Length: 417
Length: 165
Ligand code: SF4
Image 1 (cartoon, chains in turn yellow, cyan):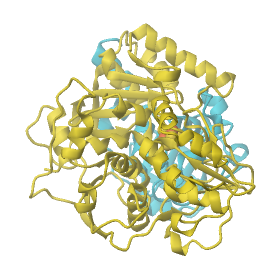
Image 2: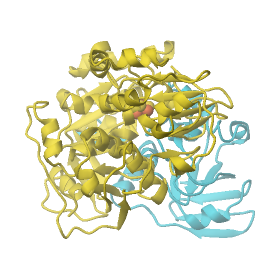
Image 3: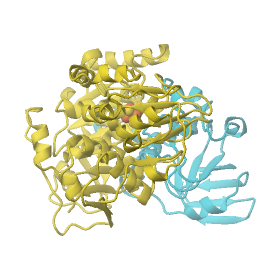
């Protein structure tokens, strides 16, 4: 079996599962946010459930339109807050405890290796970086998960992706996953697990692993996963009282497909509008002027990401006419970035530093684009209208490339500025 | 389920931002959401669509975010079924859960033209294109997916489990 199949078998109380079969699994965490939880709460009521199956295994994170962007958003957040209180859910945070869901859940030790997690947010697949099975669902599935502590799944086949070689300077987890999506396409892993391995992954820090698993959904995958190793266990240590369960795929596990990516010559990647599969190496980008750069999101809002951006921005200044918006992924990260001097460095360089939020990532607020405007962003989607007007454009890249582009006023690599 | 209407045709990878843009996500009312359905890729859809109509699309329909607002908006707009060459998995689950009929049929998705009069019969497993005279068959759902449709969606199914029916 693959690691994903083993995780599902374990949570279904089975010794073995086969691809294609339906299983019902017990859940270690059910997640909702300010956009999806309000509908989940309505559905939960319609199910006539009285309490959530286990308040400690539910997390409700208001991050998309917070700090509340308008009265409708404030009403939604209030609804989520009141539900959390009513149900005694401890995992609801305001202000200094908060941040973007997929950053704070692992940071707070609420997801650990071996867990099975559903979230009413497609990027729930981020936690695969911990060797957990984690997948996005809709609000009604989340409501059922909150009510019953269970969810049904169809056991997926896996695609194994082997990254070999050594990374060149400035090449990051974002480039590894963009390169893959460029190769297999946005539906290339539909209904499949994406299992990342190889010497490059072995050497990749957790931040890069989270970025990679985060974007598994952009290849259509059900989940992305990396088997836990020393890096994972060291990262998890001290974050949770629960014992991590480190599983791995069997040596004879069957894969639907194997993709080999040699990284020796891999350069930073940029995904052109309007699909994440439209990737090009930075040297093939050509002249693309930008009005905005966004560094943040559940994809790249971690401290390591901010450090990468800072390395590029240090002693430089954002180009005239460019708004470079930096969004730490959580209040804690914002605080640490401040202590390290990164926030001052960003401000000196002419960047705007925002409170943690999804904000512009989905065109909600804090940096929405007008018709004809172009942004480079460390987010994960560049669909039509994703960051604002349907006539705007989003280019996806790593923090280093986004920072370099902000300095150059056009899409550029860190080595070009 | 048997329904008839005109086909509204789209290409591959219709994403959930195209179905309901994020700027409308602070709403949850189905009718309000339906008023913005498909807006960013087909501004006139909302004016053209009539009860019973079907959406016909290519590969990976509903890719992107997990927002249930997308199938909710399509259903509330009066669409009786979505026929696509393939669906993104979260959209597929969401549609089953809320009772929006979805049919995977690459043949029908390729052959049906925009504006064709179409009848979908999900019990018989057939799609008839009255404009061209073509008929297509599709495989019925199996396993929990079939049980969900049988139960009328996930809410009644959970009520059953909780004993709150
Ligand atoms: S940062 Fe963007 S992709 Fe991540 S959870 Fe928020 S809206 Fe979704």
